[in-house]
Length: 151
Image 1: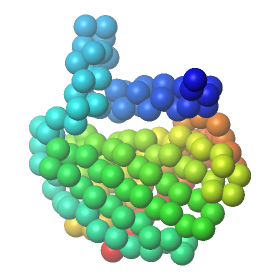
Image 2: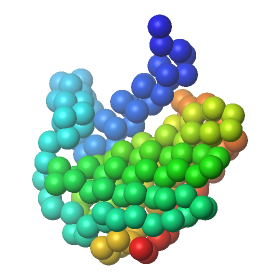
Image 3: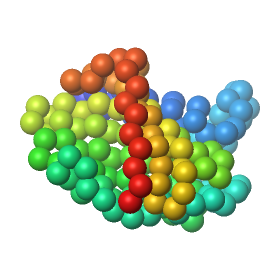
Image 4: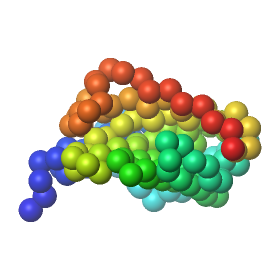
């Protein structure tokens, strides 16, 4: 049986991916929005830049992959925490998605909303904020965590 934390994470992911995706959320279009987000249909516009690459932050490797369907997958692992971001382009330079934050010491897992402003090839700024449906771990509700990188 799924734990309450896993159920809340699942609900937060579905809610965020559908609300972040550029489609109307009226009752008639909700299922088509969900299908589009989950199946990862190709973006209606090509991303302007490619952010695929790797770099190091806080002693851990960050690996960014950009796919043809507009999906971004970013992983980052250190000795104390791990992040996994999955997002989609909402236009040619902006990505919206969900990031899981895992504290490897305590085992706590938090869900964060994330936005990337892609500025050039292998360059972006991000803003991350704890989802209201998530456990906070050591993160604070309402705090925006900014980050910019060129690699």
